[in-house]
Length: 113
Image 1 (cartoon, rainbow, N blue to C red):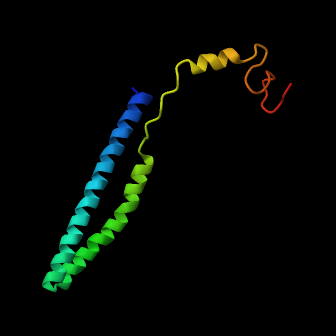
Image 2 (image 1 turned 30 degrees about the horizontal axis):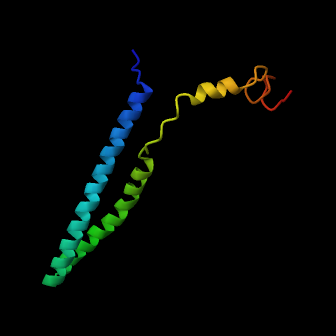
Image 3 (image 1 turned 45 degrees about the vertical axis):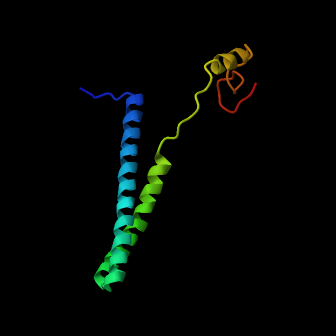
């Protein structure tokens, strides 16, 4: 028994997973910024090398998380404007009756009649 996935359902599920990934990356980046600022501030105030190093490490982790954020945003589906419903029938109606597609009715690609 094969499991069939409808294309629309697969796209909807993929978009939801991408949104979830984007949320996780945004939370991770936010946490690292807060953690880094607090650690560096506390390290400078207390003259603690350990706190300062922890804060710098947070910013290094932040730098490594930025490409993940960029890739997630690049993959995220952008809304597209809907094509007019009357566009396709009009294009079909405008095609000359004797011509079929861009090959001139020869049936072979690249050969024109």
